Length: 273
Image (cartoon, rainbow, N blue to C red; front, side, top):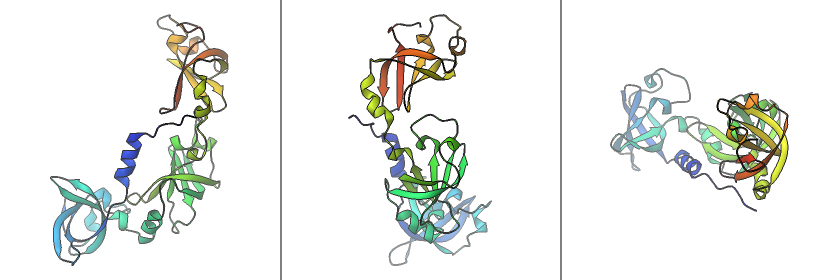
């Protein structure tokens, strides 16, 4: 049975967000809204100069990091990379709440976790994970990671108070968040549908857009039929040719597991319907 390929761009992003080593640093100045720090070596001696950007200074809201840090103050900060001709950048926010950092470091990618839905928004879902520090909400599910099927709003999938089980995509010390996936624990319906290429199927139109229509082909599986497969007439739009809910017969032209999409063509294999 074929499986969807892993997106190399996602893998690269996850690698960039992996926690870095923690360094002891001393605040030596401010450069605009950035914090300049002196790194300390293993013996506690002063080493190179590093920089903490404003957005990495704290999880608390502030206008300037001088509101939080004093000259000479020693803090812990996580290495995040080198910019500006090799200068080391660090994150103080990644070490700001020790209990939160310990919790995040205990969570591994693809680990199965449980929690309770806290808030549902059009951009995603916040989740109180079991075992997280009191007073915090560490879990987050992006809209594309909720379900394999198309939806209009996340509230169609979950609601506040629901208990959920999800797979960890990544735990980020810098954001203090665990990105989760609900759909990772459910089989992609396209995997079993991949052998349908070339088949002629009939299904209802589920959505109409100006340049084509979506057609339900099986439970959890929709395909897209481009406007050019409906008509050869210039100036026509999909909504003038078909209605939502109307049954339509199509041919499966392509099943793309990587992009999770099905491309359809006219049942007779030619343009026009």
